Image (cartoon, rainbow, N blue to C red; front, top):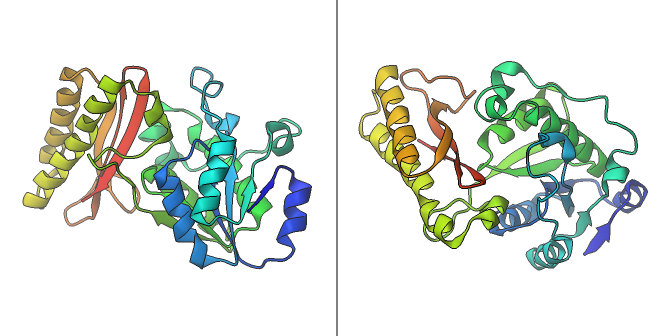
Length: 278
C-alpha cells in the first residue's frame, strides 16, 4: 500500500489506472470505514482511501482542532483491509489558497435535519467531496449510510453535475450491542458509552411501531417523534431531532412511502447521529 501526501504524486500514481474506487474519510477509522474499503475492493482497479479532516465542514464552535488525527494507525488498518493507496494531504495541499469557490446544495435537502443544526455543513462537505472525487479520478465512491443525509446530498450532487461516478452506500456498521460505529464514539466516557445505546433503542422502537401500523398518519408519526425526543431528554440527552422522513428526499412522508427515521442528540459533550430505514 502506498501513502501519498501531494496532488502531484497522486496524479502520477493514477496514470496506471482507469477505474479508481474511492472511500473518502476524515481518518480516526473504525470498522465501518474498513467495511467500505472491503466493499470497494472488487469495484475498481485500484482502491483508494482519502484521509483529510476538512475545516470547511466544521463550525467555529465544533471540534476541528480536537478531532483525532491517527494517520499511522489508520494506515495499518487500511493496509490490512486491502486498500491500495492512501491519499492523506495536508490542509495547505488541499487549500493552497482560500477555497472561495464552494458548492451550495439545494436548501430543501441540505438545510433540514443536520443542515438546520449545523449551518453550512453540507457546503463544506460538498466542496471537499467534489474536490476529492476530482483529484482521485473516482469512478466509484463509497459512503456510509450512517450519514444518511450526507449520502443523499452527495448522490444528488454527482447526478446534477453529470459526473461519471457511481455513488454506493455502505450499510451502517454497529457494535454487538447495537451502537452505530462512529469516530466520535471515542469521546464517550465509559458510563456514556453504556448510555449511548438509548439512541439506537429509540430508533428501533419507532421502526417497530411503524412496521406494526404502516398506515399511520402524519399526526401519529409526529407523536412517535415527540415521544422519542421526550424520552431521550428525560434520560439526560439533548436531542436536536428525531424525524421520520421519506427515504427518497427526506421530506415528510406520505402514505405508502418508504421511510427512514433519523436522529441527532448530544450525550454529555458528544453529539451522535443515527438512522434506520423502515
